[in-house]
Image 1 (tube, rainbow, N blue to C red):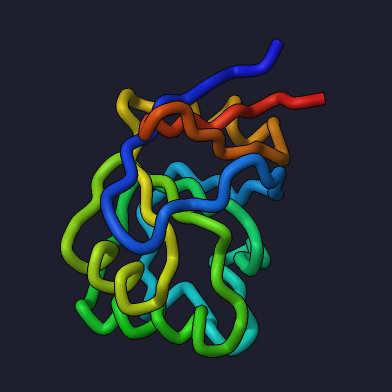
Image 2 (image 1 turned 180 degrees about the vertical axis):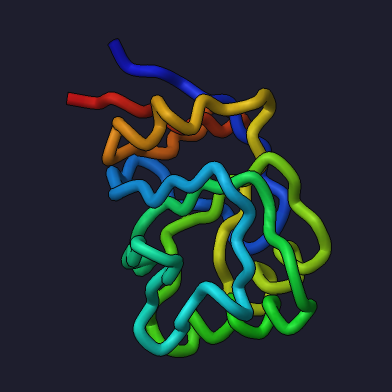
Amino acid sequence: MAREYRLRHVAGPPPPTGEEAGLVVTPRPISFLGEVDPREGILKRPGETQSLGGRIVVFPQSRGSTVGSYVIYALSFYKNAPLAMVVEKAEPLLITGCVIGGIPLLVFEEKPDYGELGRCGRAVILADGGVYKMVCGQG
């Protein structure tokens, strides 16, 4: 059975809807300045490298330097932008980066199950009268 997560759009352009995409899921905050390579479009952590381009990136919030906003912008500049970012907390660093980078930023209405999302692999964002939801477990 497909699991649905209700979302609120907070910054950047409206998310593309109806387009299934791969998920990048991490239960830890992301430091864009130290952990993201915008030229390669990857999240780099010890023992973990994940491509961000064209995917829905799910994480609690960002952390670190305000320069992270420019790293988010650089993902778009180098054509490696995620399809959308979905977080628990949208703080100014993320909002600014998504606005200048043209990346949709959405916030979970309730705490997500990162383990379940990580097992999904793919999801789709849908819209119904201005309300967004991410559906995990399609097909």
